[in-house]
Each structure stands twice: as C-alpha cells, then as structure tokens.
Length: 598
Image (tube, rainbow, N blue to C red):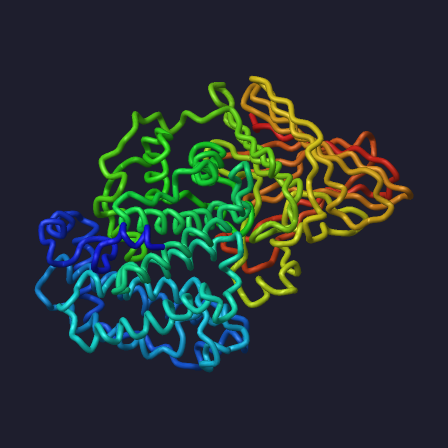
C-alpha cells in the first residue's frame, strides 16, 4: 500500500479539470454539446426539483413497478451533471444556487440505493447502508463536484457532500475491506455490478479522501476485486450480459482503470493484461453487419456499442476502428464519464490508421461460449449475416435461449431475438421465466414434448462441429440438455450459413424420443409474415424480407402465429411463428431453409 501511496499526489484529485483551469473549460465552451448544456441548465434553474416522496420509493415494494421511481430519480440526479458543467463553462456563479439546492435535496434522501435493490427496505429504514449501482454513481458525482468547484461552493455544501459521500460510500466500503462488516455481494460477483460499484467508490475516494494512504487502500481494493469482474468474460472474452451491459459494465471498468491511471501518473495500469484485452474487444467482435448487433440477454434490439468506449478501446489496443476514433468531447452521459473522455486522458492524441467501417471478418467465433457470428465478408452479392448461439441457461442476465439465432438482411434483423422486457420486480425474481420473452417461448428454438427449456448451467449447447470455408460456415450443437424430457434421446441443431448468392441460413433440427412425443420450433420477428403455400413463410420487416422453406421429411406440420404479449422494449410486439408437427413422433428431422426473397 505504501508503494501506491507514494504514487499519489499530496491532495486528492478528481477527474476532469477544476473550474480554475479556465483555458481547459473555455475550449469546451466553444463546442455545441456544451453550449446546449448551459441552455439546459438555465431551463432547469427555472423549474422546481421533482418531488420524490416516500410513497414513490415504496411503490416498488407494493406494486413491483420500477420505472415510476427511476424516472423521477433520474431527473433529480441528472440535474447535477447539467448544472455543474454549466457553472464550470460559464464561471459567473449564477448556477451555484440551483446546484447547492439539488445537492441538499439529494443529501436529505433516506438512501441513495434504488428501491429495486432494497427489497427488504433495510436501507430505506436506516438499518443498513449498502452500496449499489445508483448510490455509487451519486457518490462519485458529488465528490467530483466538490473537486471541480472547491471553495466556489459554500462551506456548508462542501461539508454536506463530504459527510454524505463518506457515510454512504467510503466508510461502508472501508469496513467491508477491513473485515468489520460483511462484504456486499457485488464485490465477489462477475457481472456489471462489480465494475460499476467499484468505479464509483474508488473514483469518489480519489476525489475527496485527504489521506494518501486511504486513497491507496481504495485503489488496492479496486485492483483486487475488479479481477472478479474480468472472470465473468471467460477466456474468449464473450459478455453473456449482452452488448448493452458491456457498455455499462466494461465501460465502468475502463473508467476505473483510467481514473487509477491518472491518479498514479501512469504507474498503475489495469488495462495491460490479456485478461482485459479479450473482453475489451467484445464490442468490435460481436457486430453482425452494417452496425447491427445481436440482442442476446437483456438487451435492446437496437443496441449499439458506446462511441466513447469503442474509441478508447480502439486507441488503446490498436483496433483501427476509424469510425469510433473521433475524439469529440461531449457533455452527455454521467458527469465522471463526460469528464474522463472530454478532457485529455491517457490516450488523448493517440490514433491508429483506421480501417473502413464495413471491413469485417467473415466470421467471429467465441469458442468457449458457443457463439458464432457469420458475415458476407468480401462476397459482394451476399446481403445476409447471422448470429448463432449455443451458450447455457445460467448466464448473466440470462434468457433461456440455447440454440437461438438472428438473421440480418442489409441493416434489418428480419428474424431476431426480441431482447429484454421492461424491468419489474418479476424480472429478477423466482418468477423471471414466467416472461415469454425471457423463457424459451420467445426465442426461435424448439418446444419439446410440450416443454420449454430448463434454466441452469446444465442446460447448454454442446458444440459438436464447426467447419468454416470461404463460402460456407457450419455450427452443430447438441441442445438436448436444455430440455427436461426423460424420453428425449437426441436433439441436435445444425446451422449452415452460406454466402452464395444473396446469402442463406439452413437450420436443421434432428430429434429422437423413446416413445412418440410432440415437437415444434419457431421463428421470431418484429415484422410481418404470410404463408406462401403449405411449406413456405415470407417474413418481412420494412423493405427487407426472407423466404423460409420448411421441410419435415414428409411429416405433416402446421404453422400458427401469435403476438407475444409482454411489456417489451420494442415499438411493436414480437410475433412468434410456431411450426408444429401434427402428430407425436419417435424420430423427426425439421429443416428451415432461410434465404433472401428475390
């Protein structure tokens, strides 16, 4: 710890530049994004702070609704970034009063922990002080404001900030790492919580903790416990939480690493190992084509990688992603993220010779996770790309989706995974898989003997075969373990992606039972569909369409579609096109030949 303490400045230093550095702030003041922020702060100054009564906090525990409290809390807490940036840009003192007002209001809140993370209401009733995604962010923002404005804030406000950040973040964390209280679960977990909470706690400590030794203690803990987060990616770097949570979780790991790098003047670098490089490149490797990404796990179907994060990663690891390497400061996002990326950081000015955004490899295989992305590559006529998923049903932000797939034509996911539902108390409870978009019913996978897929790590896609050529890629999976059907002897799903012509995907399911049982599969779309004869389905979304030719080796089947009526994050309800064998079978082979509609 002494070695790290010696790397640190005598006084605490936060991210960004203090308001006294007028040259730095005046440079930002010329940019449109920051000019808009000043105007937004002026508007907020004329508006009352949204009320957040106790009944609103208790709404979640009574109804399971998360969004009503979160919407109000977001507006209250979002004022911090806007108003402090405006004051730093303007430097006339006219935003100090509204800033101090919102700080006082936030410091009067019973807890900074979200209701959804306080199911027992122990934090609400003051029985404990936990650290969560929200409280760590508020603490880091307030500590950063104290660093930026210093004595431009009143002594009362600075005292209020320091007392609350210490009480709600620093002291509980110190007690945990010293063994004086039980550690919060996220310190040992491998999902986004670990990186997000650590970044907030360590960032806040570096900004306001007077003792160099104490700041060093926080850095050591951040370095130690963040290794748990990295373990969640596995050796292939795949993020089972999905791209949206990669933006959030790994984005905060980058913030943690950059903050420590700056605090130690480049001497302690959490980004230098291969254990970091693999997950860092996930965002670049998971693209299907034309800026379309799979919505595996709790993602939006329109999910995109963070521009800031991808730019930082590209420069750090020489990925040559020219479309992301535009160093344009922006006032958007959380305060600490805005400052770390808008002011000079460890990579400022470092650029690589960029490649064109359209130059993607023919395929990306995440071999340990059983995920394959297939692309047209240099085949000019081909307009189809696919994402194929093995995986298992115990992943972070898991959906029961072993064997799922996505088909992209041009810039449209014509066949897809519908992504996440709107979060409620059910989403992260024992009732999670009652949701038809989280269980396997909302995914293009089989229903076996009337049963959906099971949950748990024992339900997985075993990779039986991979074969790659310039024209064709094959992935074969044994997905039988995903179904708790004792009569099931065999269930394999084989994907064959072809770059010939405009592109095609063939999905073949082979099933065997000990006695006759029912079997069906499905397609999922946000678009329209119609039958074309007894064995063909045309699925379209906007200007793009695919024709699906169904073969069952002479067995009769029926096609029946329904809307999946869940509170999804898409503008339209997804449609499930079910394809069912009419009679129970002991053996069957069902083939879906998906090709571009000519």
